[in-house]
Image 1 (tube, rainbow, N blue to C red):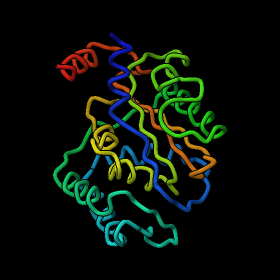
Image 2: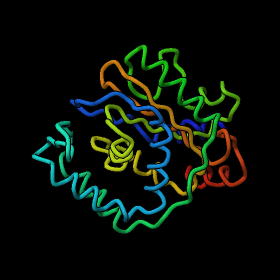
Image 3: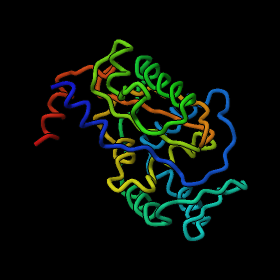
Image 4: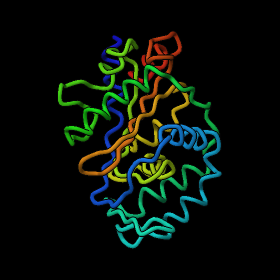
Length: 224
């Protein structure tokens, strides 16, 4: 039951991979900055509308040049997911703040370490490990949701990628970012051979991805 629930949760989100991107290396303390930016987005979604509108103004077809930089991305869908995200943020209420979790952070760091060497993308490691098994190896449970951003140049860009969710039909990253049942998170960032940077965020209902009564009720209701 636990493993099945974990697979369902992890399969909601796929990796965000810009087709082309020029980025700078991950800065010192990027994980803490990403964590803070994620919680700021959850706390006041509407406060980020202006930033996203500015981002949209720099879209030319499917190419976006980041405001104040020479960094350009080729998006997959252009303005469509940005407009969707703007509508969502304008009407969204605040979510509970995520608490930092060392087990989830260690599992995220394990995935960054693997893909920094292999150059792979996605949620499965070269050894076949998935988000739940990496958390379990670190002494946690299997109830974990994972999101990954590749090629982001700072913390705000990591969260923006996840909220816009370009190229992901079910907008699974956006759903995870704003999932009210997720209460704990761990962040790890590092270099990537192809996309230069990557950030992995593992999130869970309970500390260490353990099953509790509330998460069990949520998983059962979601499966119906």
